[in-house]
Length: 94
Image 1 (cartoon, rainbow, N blue to C red):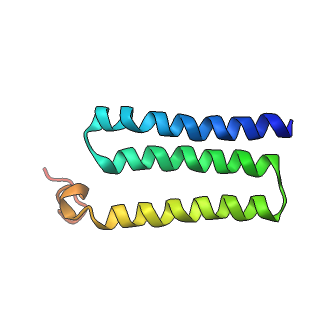
Image 2 (cartoon, rainbow, N blue to C red):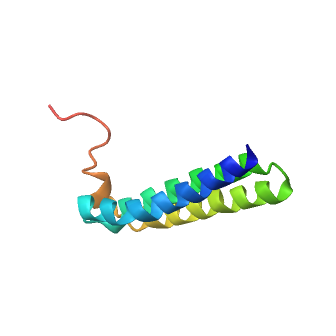
């Protein structure tokens, strides 16, 4: 079972790398492309953690998730108000 989970984690990471060009081609934007990659890498890290539930596996999964949070936060800060849409106090316009 451990070997299967490790192979699945490698396959998941590889699929993330293959999905990046497809996501970029579909959206034409870097931000969603990186989000796709980070989601696949997070899934691969969690599969790896399931294969080896020791402290080293926990540290690896935590590092992947922390990296995802840092990169996602940095991408979100660079968005500016135009990415969030118009602001009108949260009330629908009538």
